[in-house]
Amino acid sequence: MELNKYIDHTLLKADATSADIKKICDEAVKYDFKSVCVNSCYTSLVKKSLENSSVLVCTVVGFPLGAMSIKSKAFEAKTAIEDGADEIDMVINIGKLKEQDYDYVEKDIQAVRDATKGKVLKVIIETCLLTDEEKKKACEISVKCGADFVKTSTGFSTGGAKVEDVKLMKDTVGDKAMVKASGGIHSREEALSMIENGADRIGASSGIKIIEG
Image (cartoon, rainbow, N blue to C red; front, side):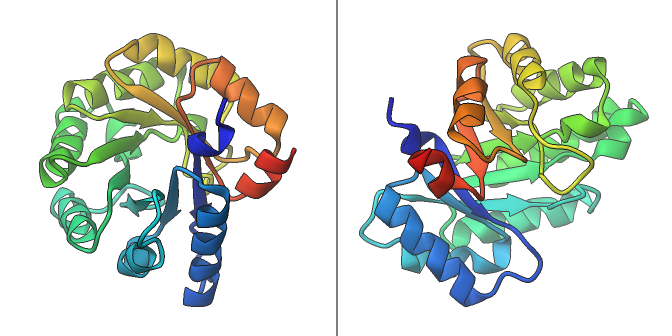
């Protein structure tokens, strides 16, 4: 197993500087990770830093709360693609899901899907804030909108990826989408456990530690 190719090497902290971003790009090239995942203001910098490598550019949208307007989220996604993003990780509107406004949740995801045609879309459902039924519903809506992945967490809320959530999400989406486990994965053992239970991708700021065991 090429564990490195499961990893989106991630830096999403508010105080991340351009120098920090360049450093994780250099690390991603050295370890040949799947992608570098950053906030949207750094998309073009990452694109430039990863030139002549096979590492993809992954940008988060509506991060970390997911509560911005649909138009704003779609515009951020469109801009990120124009700036060089290969993959978009969007946060759903969690409050709207919890109040069972499924029409809104679908429109929100669909707007970003429409803005990212031809690119990979991962939908972050923030499992730590949801019941199992809400997790299933979020996954079902994501699949309906044509998302490529459902993703556990932002890593910025009350908890991160859990094996049982990965399993539940995989059972729900089947072969219609992939699953990304993200948030709080710090060791090789944790990463492998996520993969064994259905994760197709790992989002982590500890990518090097995971690879080196």
